[in-house]
Length: 222
Image (cartoon, rainbow, N blue to C red; front, top):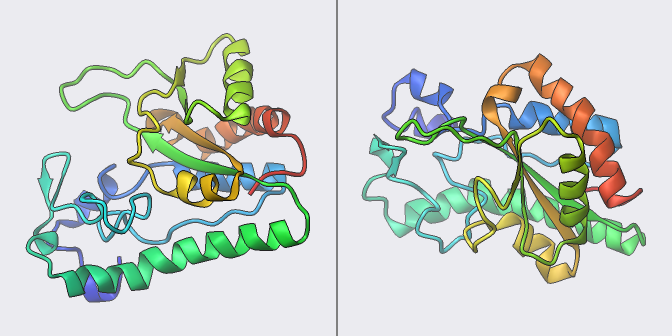
């Protein structure tokens, strides 16, 4: 959390919950980056400050309530307050991604953007989510189609095709950076109970890295 915002009026325990961060996703992403020799750019701040996977004009950019939990300091924000968070957190993050992709393009290095997320094992009503891994795509991603095939061939993974979420216009990072450059992108979702601790996350990285490498082909990962 930025020091100036404290804990947004929430108890410390709220930041152990999925409302504040994608549990396990950063450890998994670091593991994949190391195994693939890929550049990793990650957000340092909680999405309760500002959601960097939402467009600057998206109504969910700064949430007042997340999964039934009210965020007191996010209520009744003025446009100037949101602009300050955009300038401090959202804009620098996306500028860094753009800089990396522009540099790779200038060097003639092919790129595929891989976005790593995690999802809760069950919905709010307790209904279980049966997928171990999900791949989100817009229906025109060759790398995503290849990865889905390779994941299904594993035989012991529950694989979601645009599950548990769909690439439906809510996500910002992949379409903004890959779509406008004509690059392919994979949005990878992994169930949180599989990667909640470091051992689980690194075991999943061991499993997914060779599949991603085969789906994408070297040297095209950013």
